[in-house]
Image (cartoon, rainbow, N blue to C red; front, side, top):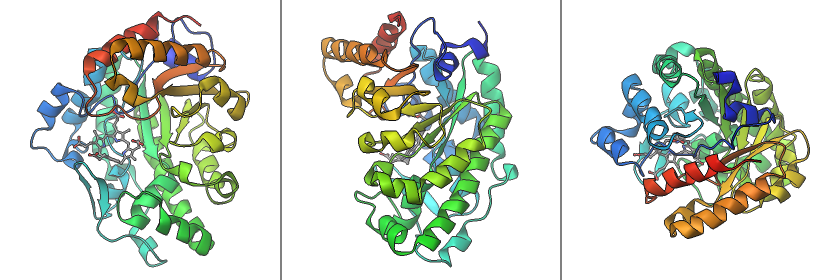
Length: 340
Ligand code: CP3
């Protein structure tokens, strides 16, 4: 076996696999006691800029679960912090921005990202690819809409009202913001790929708030440009609540479309259309139920996933902090027994 033949990369390319590959969004994090130990007294953004900690935290779930891919430990707002945006990640809240961007002058806060702004990313990716050997490393970035929402709202938002107000009310300003963010996102992904990441995931977590026609007009051109710039590796595109968007997400240029738990994978395959692999989609809350329930529901996901041209098993969103790691270990083993 070598890296290029790993089950994860083969599934992304819709090639036959020895077993269904699996990894979990937020697999490194608060559900792991070893994570809580190394993070004690260390603020999130400090952890994200310290290569030794990035490497250790990224490796923790790989060691414990034997997942088929590692995801780089960082956060979607790290490149914004690196270019000087005044923000912090508040525990239990999420990213909070000191001076929200609401007008053309606010855009001046965004300058292009240079590799020299994030030397700790390059260093950690290089160390990780050596340590991981044949296990692929997934690099990631937040998508322009989701990053834009944090910048415009100033923090987490339920309905993204101000974000949509700019999108509908000031389309020129909106597109200028999306352009600038796309440049940063593309560079952020390129830095990870150039240092050795084998695949990338674009997290457009909150894009499910937008209707399909509006996605096409206000977001799709920017996402397309990002995916075109990273066509040398498998590209995964993920959002939450995207049931009605799966068709148009299929047009954005990724190789793999991530699906949350609301749409079964066979139906998702129909909506996304041919030529794509799917990733997903066990409801993360199911892991809080007894193992018998997890087992039954996971088998259902695997069965429906056979309708897709390639299937990377994952949760429908990130691992919840209260998840028992033993449940994830058993789930990983169960997925590995599955033959398509
Ligand atoms: O998946 C992984 O294991 C890799 C690490 C990762 C983190 N954030 C670490 C993190 C990834 C891929 C992200 C992406 C991210 N960050 C997204 C997209 C994915 C998604 O969940 O939809 C978003 C929307 C963010 C913004 C963000 N950062 C939120 C909403 C939070 C949670 C706030 C909270 O405490 O509930 C964060 C903080 C964050 N990012 C934590 C971790 C491990 C928790 C911070 C801590 O442990 O102190």
